Length: 167
Image (tube, rainbow, N blue to C red; front, side, top):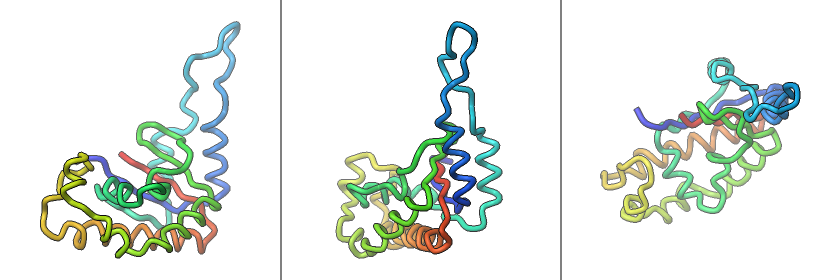
């Protein structure tokens, strides 16, 4: 199956609650503190939020190739604040969503195509190992990138936060 990426629109109030719970210190237990915080945000809660989300982008396995092509700013894919480990779920606040939308708006698909080197991506082990396939940029990366741009533009227009998930 592999590692898949999804981005889901999320209300800013829900995002703030998740961020607060994920950053809470572990509770005291007598004379010692627990070495690991209890799971403040469960995988089931993440899955329920994904199911309830009105809008989402599913990049399938294109996420790593797109993150590499975005170079110094892979935040729309790998950014945010972690709220769970399994799945790897992260939250971007509404302000971060607006920033991601603005960043992606300045990066047309043609600019990513100009930086696309399938041999280098294969040599660097960029996931998934499909870079030798014909038309992989036009038929796989470009449509997924445009879906990501559309997602962030719409989420920013709605003043929404985002829930990003790799898993």
